[in-house]
Image (cartoon, rainbow, N blue to C red; front, side, top):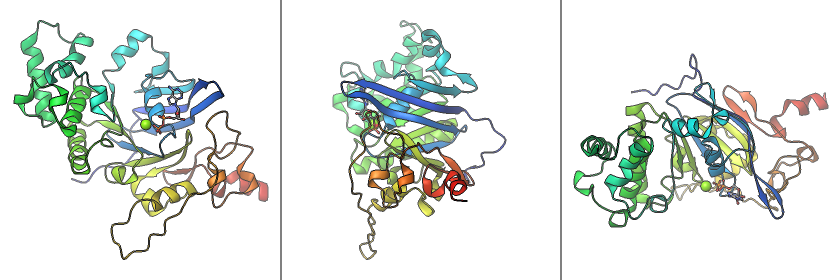
Length: 334
Ligand SMILES: Nc1ncnc2c1ncn2[C@@H]1O[C@H](COP(=O)(O)OP(=O)(O)O)[C@@H](O)[C@H]1O
Ligand SMILES: [Mg+2]
């Protein structure tokens, strides 16, 4: 089946507008997420990539209000999520879920698979605790969906391998039939041999249930095949966003180019062409206005500092925040 990649004629399921999340630190405000905007359409997967510490997890958590955003808007199915009361937000979490990197850390070691997967039904009061038969049917269905054998129902997380533990995390996230799942490095803690199984599982489930995914990873090769679009983050900002195939064929931002050049090339006969990033890292604490990548950028000019750069559409569905593609620069030069 050819995947429908047309973004036309549908309203976005999620609109993130100027989202900021700053943390107070002893040295000043840390700009973990700094003015991020994007739209995501139903049934699609947005891959979010960038180095460790660039704000991927904080962005995911801010969208779900697990970290309360500093400012901005999160519109889910036309509704402003940030305006919801705590009670309303709790209900909304049925539709918006998260899967974490390390299932061992996110699973309660004292709860069996049954108890772990049953818990969301109890928290959201879908069933009462004594409705054991009904809950068990749900738990067994979910275990089947994620490929966990029925006999494991009373096992504890420490009795299982990493892949099975992540399957529990996925089953739990799916329990209340969410529409959007934010997957935060769901395979990064797993053995390479198991990573592909979990990625395939997520894709199968997405196709079956029509889920919308945000897939966060520091590893571009992981999102290459499963994303419709990929957004590249650098120090709290989105610097490029486009269809997945365009990112690999035609990367525009110098940081994206550097990131792509760091993907290991399996054929040893091919030249590496690896771009090594030099230069001082900009601090995320109270950064000066200007491109956050400028200090490490091969193409930096004095114009890269002094003002922030917004994502601009420079080709169909291809957005980049860089002076090299910025119209304002052309106007100033004209
Ligand atoms: N609770 C917190 N308090 C203070 N700083 C934080 C907190 N969580 C994350 N940060 C900082 O925010 C930035 C982004 O972190 P994070 O979102 O975890 O990045 P990533 O997921 O891309 O590795 C980092 O500089 C990190 O140190
Ligand atoms: Mg993270």
